[in-house]
Amino acid sequence: MLVSLRNRSKQQDLYFPLAASVQAMACDVSSSESRTLHSVQALVLLCCWQLPFGATRNDHSDTFAALACQYGYRLGLHRPKHPGDFEYNAAWDEQTTILRRKTWAGCFIVCQGISATGIPVPIRFDHSLLEVLTSRPEWMPDAIFHQLHTARKSYEICNTLGGHDATCNGLLPNASATLRVFDADLRAHENSFSESWTKQDLIHFSWPRLLLCVFGLFEQDGQRVSQPQDLHHWLALGYATATTVLRTASSIGDEIPYIASHLRKCLINAVFLLLKIMSSSWHPFVDEATVWNCINQGWNMLKSCSLVDHDNMSRTCAVIEYLSNGPQTAEPTLANTTLSVRSRFGANLVLDAVFRARDRFSQSIRDQRPLDYTQAAVQETFLNSVIHQIPEVLPNLDVGASDVDWNAIFNDLCAT
Image (tube, rainbow, N blue to C red; front, top):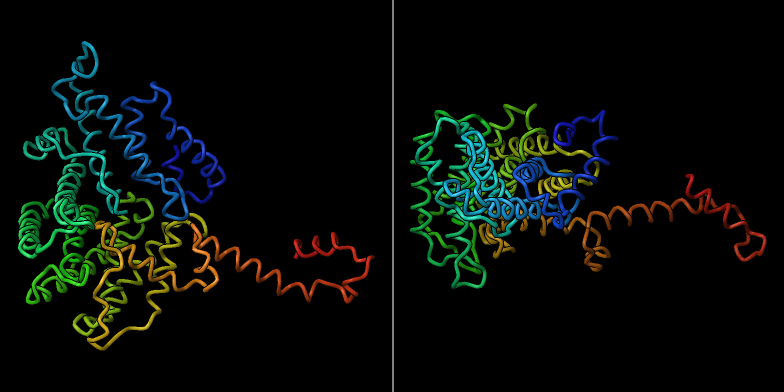
């Protein structure tokens, strides 16, 4: 019910109280009765269609994904051929086994969406998932099959390029050859399966390719991992991938408010990559009219996903607006080819954009370093508006007089 009500504006009075109740139940880990297959499925759904939240730190999707995986491990979803090892004398019929395997695939897919926030995923790509991809059983829906393939590609790229044990930020040094190997693998996969993709599958496939482009284009700790002669390749690939995915999404614009959150994150990455290119010396090498048109389409689509003012999608759109109106550099010496965030590989590009966009807040807010900059700005705006209204509301009285009715004055302020 909660998922079906999410984008129904006429039922928002029902949706938000229900969302609060569901969140409380989902986070209740004290009851062993909650660790069931149905609970895992519910948690996966909450990761796909997130509960409303404002600042990213208030997003509980990573918690829900971790719970889903841990419940799944306890239930033995990763070992479908050995149910008795996890529950005494257990023996599942064929339909239950199929449902359990689909659910485990869903856990892996949503966890790769969580990795877009730069957090390590709480699940491994195991034999049961590999078996599904290699055998492609008849009971596996095309959507899950294709998205599981893409999630595996993202998992391998993030772990290899952003999870290196020998560096403090996790980035793989001297990764130019590795980038090329992953690029060739993605091209081969696209040639094999793209004819059977839906438009949503194509959007999802942009995520691992955009990851490669970000790693190949931008400097990390003063060094670019790709070779100078490869730069044009990653620029062209990033430009083509970002514009294609945004145009594809625009062609199904009516569906965008209802797509899963990990697909929306693909659109966000595409928009921020184009914005980063346009703020660098690379922008003469792309079609600026096409780029700005795609950025505008992306903004409109993401705006349609916003439920209330100052929710996460609304904040994302505010960041896009600010960076779109910022000065565009034209001098090669001013190239904006570095990322301020380096240790959260899946989210380095997005967080770099968010941190740069904090310049839109007043200096007083930045000095406070609040947990929620947007909320602090809302409060500051409200207080400033109240202060500006005081001359209009206060009567022409001697403010030191003892007969001033301050309660009446402040009631008038609140009513204004």
